[in-house]
Image (cartoon, rainbow, N blue to C red; front, side):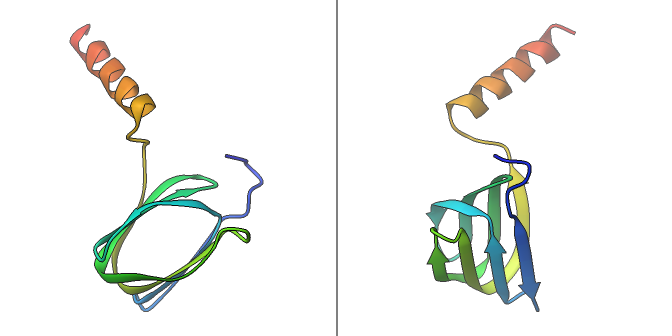
Length: 94
């Protein structure tokens, strides 16, 4: 993740979502879209979500549907689990 990486989000009327800075679509269905972006993992939640356009060469994405929430999330892979386990150990050691 580069500090100078282009990263823009534009939402119109909670129905149209466009973004610059998409590296990869990790998972998607009509209620959730999980993305890897230049500034971290992003989760879009809503209803009747559809990926209208995806231009990975330009790092652009356009989504249509009812947008209910957008959140940056911690990685849930092996590194994410290791971090959670480490936090649990730290809490137990207090």
